[in-house]
Image 1 (cartoon, helix red, strand yellow):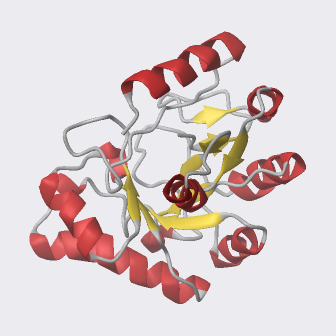
Image 2 (cartoon, rainbow, N blue to C red):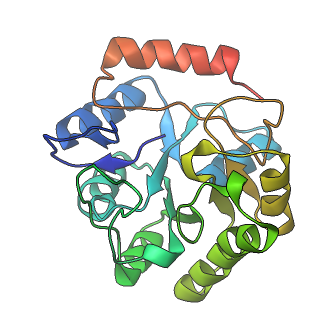
Length: 225
């Protein structure tokens, strides 16, 4: 689970990985015979019994640096990834991160460019609101509305959803399923873990080789589903 890849001296929420560190993290994967792929490809490979050596790479929020820093680095390795986009803020900035650095988000042309280069575009809701406190109508707008808006923008189906802040209970997981998504990404393992609440491992600026090895082992042992 990544967010932003960029040079950043002010990162209070620890969502930014520097381009040099990110390149070294991809190299770490490649040297171990691991290939970064989108979540849809990873899940399809699991169903076919052919997921050995594949690692799902996800990028939350849809920052503009996904185009300038992430996609070129992934393509250089023959990797792909999924980027989860806030449909109601395309081309704007991370307004939900009050008190943190203002980061631009991808615009519509950027999203289409990323899709043409093999990246999966998923939904991160319509407005990056915590879903657990919303009414049924608001929940529908965030989940199903976000999907419809992105599909209209891209001209292709949107298969994946990512819960803002990782907040997801049974009601929210059911809403994602009913909206027609093929999977949902959470953060932590819970009693809901499965195809619609996939646990992920956070990767940050401090994660060098030793920490990556430990996180990889922990994820396989504790968070497998």
